[in-house]
Structures are given as structure tokens and as C-alpha cells.
Image (cartoon, rainbow, N blue to C red; front, top):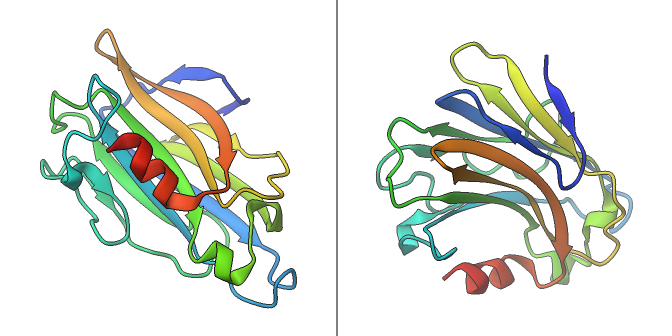
Length: 184
């Protein structure tokens, strides 16, 4: 039975191999243009900085050096039900230097397209046990992000050898560049 999280809530991830599923629907009539949302992961060390540039996982770098994190690729539209993008994580392979994985979703070319997360509906992050296909937890963003073009959906972190998920739901309007500058 999956746990539906509220913002700020934390929950253990009791699966060594899991898939992060991200989904959303967009209101195409808002700007007349299609939306392209992008999922990115920042694999951080003790200092809350990227372990290396190759530990920034996104549509142009789909897997971590240790092959423990593999991104499914870019979904350009968000059409259809279920997960729009997926990232597989194998904690049995993950580099011991990694202490936190931050999950961020941004709108590609948001400024030029005049788009923001206030025009996105039904957005969620969920974690599914890869071996049993059982949904472990789900966090649905229910806030109105009227000026934000990037949202930190959540973070996965190691606390005393246990991996946990925290539902964050924090938006900002400077796009992906802001997160890159924060974590480099």
C-alpha cells in the first residue's frame, strides 16, 4: 500500500532498487505552445554539492558514472497517463560518496515560451519498488506555482545507512541554472 505524502513529510525507502516516476499534465491553451518538462537529479556528497559534473543526471547525461542512476530520457509533451519520465536507482551500486539525491523538474525554455508551473496540473513524484512493481510512496504537488519555472519535488537522502524520501515541493523562477549553481 503506497503512502501519500504531504509537503515536508519523510518516509523510508525500503527497497534497494526503485524507480522514480514523475508525471504531469499541462494546459496547452495557456500559452498556445507545448510544454516540455524535464526531470533532473543532482547526486550530492556530504557537502551538499555534486560529487562531480557527471553526477548531474538530466536529458543530456542519462546515467551516473557507477550506473546506479539511469534516466529514461526526455518526454517532450507529458501526454498520456502515468509516469512521463522515469529514473531507475540501484542503491546496491551507488557510489558511497553520494549522500543525497535531489529531484528537480523544470520547464524547458519557460521564459521564452512564457510558461510556469501554475499552468501545470496533476504533477506528482512516486517511488516504485523495481523488483515487485509496488508503489512505495507518492507525493502530489497541489500548490499553485504561478511564477515558478522549476520545482524541487523531493530529495532522497542517506541517514545512518537508511535511505529516506522527503517531499519538498519548493519552487523558484530562475529555472535549471539556479539549481546547477546551487549544487556545483
